[in-house]
Amino acid sequence: MKGRILLVDDNLEYLDSTKDVLEDEGYDVWTAAGGEEAIKKVKSRSFDAILMDIKMPGMNGVEAFLEMKKHAPDVRVIMCTAYGVESLIRRALDEGVLAVLNKPFEMDELLQIIEDARLGDETMERGSMG
Image (cartoon, rainbow, N blue to C red; front, side, top):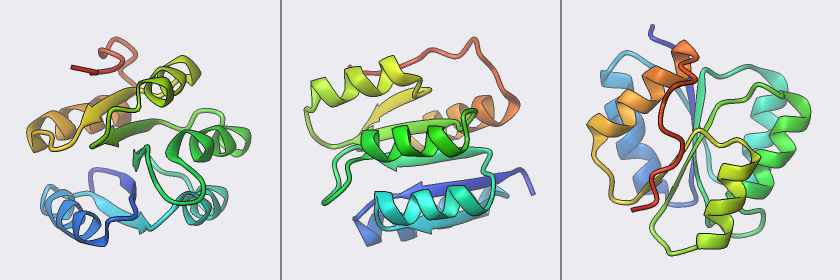
């Protein structure tokens, strides 16, 4: 097993397809359909990386990330979004999110960022807003 990944998104089809790809790559993948569920999982176990949508009903991804940091200060989060939510993206990066990917993104790019996060590579580029 390469590591434990948590996927957080309200789009269940996206969760299933991304989970399948990551499992094929050798990761132990957990899923959550929203921020509140993700926080519960982070409180009860550790993850090598978390891929979380920014815009979700109820608690958005940035709010969930900030709450996760209270319980797991070293949490490694990669945000993704299909929307132009510049203020949320900027706040996420300012608070320590490792990267922000625009959907649809290349799976190879995601896999490299996850691997960098898992290995604790602090030299990775923080934030891909283009």
